[in-house]
Length: 374
Image (cartoon, rainbow, N blue to C red; front, side):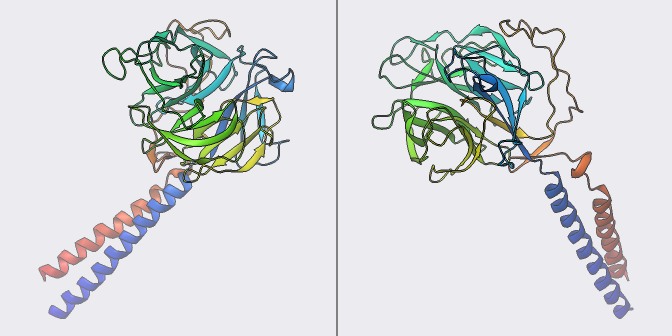
């Protein structure tokens, strides 16, 4: 009987090991199959290529960009005929809702990624108090959400040569957050690089690193990091291209940037190295002229539909925040390493392999116990 028990124990162990391997394989395949590809959206000046490249030249335009496609004839689709704005210079996706937020000078709003229309929030940013006195948040060139806290940060230009300032925004109303950095401290000054006091766009990584582009009037661009509590800035390195105006962290962790009209390389979507700051792998863009913002998300995320109870007139203001009807099931997806996975349905679902593996494990344990009992 001892030898029989030994044989059953070996068989059970083999079954358990096989089951564990199948479960691991199922989970790996599920993660690999469910990793959703990335798509980016940019609000650019001079929609449809008309105008002079100036903010007032022509209406802004929302475009959808495929980072995997390097052919300008096919890598970009125009959405709608214009946003209804002329001064959008920054955009970002809300990581909780996948709503696209953008800034039109001193006004926060949502851009519908189906119609391309900007709808303003009820309040402008206003003015804030801090160490440099009262600062008007009237020229905001950068915004980003902290994916772990949901805090929305903005970067405002300051008149003259004083450094730009970092402040927080209420995404529901569009107003700045009072005393966000301590009592009476509505902003912090961003410590500039030598001779570089200007920032173009922000992007918060999943690990809490806040990236930005620092430059001199659109030239000598450097990738930098900023302490979101103090404004202290650290240089990462030169991008080696001019006029990097848009910045976004993709769901797979890549850092993307877009160049505007001052770039000698032309309008393009770039990969930016987080370690060196170097911009590489350009995808030329030509549906508009001055690509001042970029925001990326997982392709297949729910796209908001126009809500009949909220005005989508470009110059209008949102007076309420009803949930937009999603075009697909609003099931919340898990995020693994910054990549969304959809475990319930679609390519991410591997229930058969998982059940088989689980059956092997349970069966193996049962045989082991039977062998031990004998």
